[in-house]
Length: 560
Image (cartoon, rainbow, N blue to C red; front, side, top):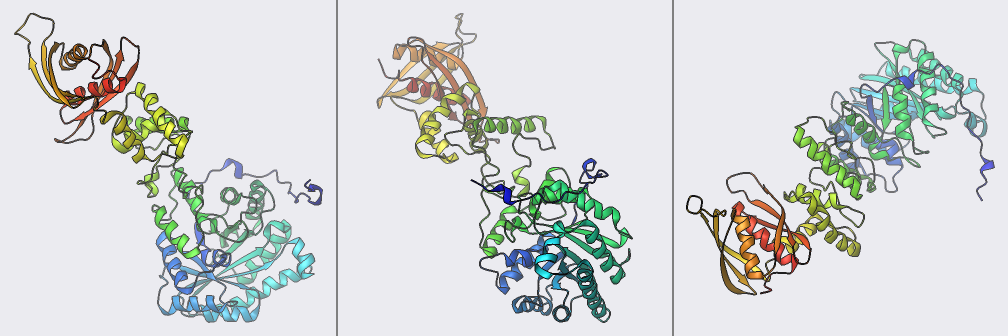
C-alpha cells in the first residue's frame, strides 16, 4: 500500500487579490530556447559540436532571438562551441546568445572570455534560494544567500563596463517554487538595484519552476504577486522557466503569462531534466489555435521533428500534442463521422474559419497535409470509411451505402488491425468496380424514340455483354437508358428487380473527367438489396456498369 502519509502539502499562499483568472493571452511572449543547455544536459547521448551548431542554426530559423547555448565556464565542450559560433560569425546581429554561470568570480571571468567577440549577450547568473536547500545543502541564512547573488551581480557589472558589446543581465532565484515569496522578492530586488536596471536597460528576472511542486494556479499566484510587488517594474523583463514534474508545465506557463510574465524559457518538445522543461512548441501551437500569432516559424512540424530526433536521439511520442504521428487521426467511428461532416460543411459554406470537430487546427497549416486525417481499425464506423473514400479517392458514397461497405472493411480490420486507405480502395474495386462475373457489360447503344412511338417508353437500348465469358446481347425499351437496361436484364436473367436509388457525380474536374454512378438495387424475389458502382467518362455507361455490378453482387447474374 502506498504510504502517502510520508508526504505533506506544499504551502499555498493566501492571495485573494489575484487578477489573472479574468485575463486572456493576447500575444506571444518573448521566447528563449534552452535546448542547447537544459535540453542537451538531459540527453543520454549529448550533442557533439556540429550537432549543436545545426540545432543553433535551426532555432534561429524557427525565430528564436534568445538562445541559451550552455555553461561555457563549466564545460570545455560548451566553451569551444561558443567560440566556434563567434569565430565562424554564425550569430546574427539580432540574436542574443545566453550563457549560464554560477555567482562565482572565476566562472564569471571564464564566461566573459567565452563571449568575447559577441555583439550582445545575456549573462545568466543564478543561485538556489529555496527553504529546503538553504537548510540541507548550504546551511545559510537569508542574508548570506542574498550576498551571493549581489556579489555575482557586481562581478558581472564590473566586467560589463569594459566589454565591447552589450551585456544583458538575467538573474534566477533557482528553486523559486520552493522559496518564500518575501525572500524571493528581496533577493531579486537586491540584484535589480545592484545592477542599476532602468526602463531603457532592463534586467531579466527569471522565476523558474525548477521543480513543479503544486498546481499551476499556485504558480500563477506567485508570479502575479511578484509582478505586483516589484519596484520600478518597467526596468524588469519578467521571465519564467517552468519544468514539467507534475505534467502541468504548459498549463503553468500559460497561467504565468496571464499573471504578468513576458518571456518564456523552454525547449522543443519539452526535452529536459526529469519529465522535461516546458514544451515551447506546444504553447506556440496553442496560441495559433486561438488565432494568435505565435511569432515562431512553426509551419513545418515534420522538419522540426526530423532535426530534433536526429540531434537529440529521442523519438517524439506518437501522441505528443500537435507533433505526434497519431494526433491528427481518428479511430473512433463517431469521431470520423464528425470530422467528415465538419470538413464537408466548411467546403459547402466556403468558410475561411477552421471549424472541424476533433481537429483544433488544420493539419495542413503545420505541414501535415500529406498525412492521413482518418485511420481505420476495428473501432471505426461507417463515417470513417466513407470519409477515406471521399478524401483520398473522390468517391462520395451514398449514405445508404456507408454501412454496407464499412462492414466489409471492418471484417478485414478485425483480422489484421489498421486498414490503410490504399487497402480500402483496393477492396472497393474488388467489391464493386471489378464485379464483372458472371455477367460483364461490354458495349451499349442508345436510341431516342421520342416522337417515333406512342408507347410510354422513349428509349431503346442494345446491350452487348458476356455471360460466363460467352458474348450475348439483348434489346429493351424503357423510360430512359437505366430503366431500359434494368428491364432487359430482368428478361435475360428471369428475376424481378427494382432500382431503389440512383446517384452520380464527377470524380475529377476537366474535360477528361470520370463519372461515378451508384445503383441501389432490390431483388424483388428474395428481398435482398445491395449497391453497385460504375465508373466511366460517359455517365450512361457508368450507370449501366453500376447496374451490372449490383446484379453480380446480388448473385443473380447468369441464372438463365
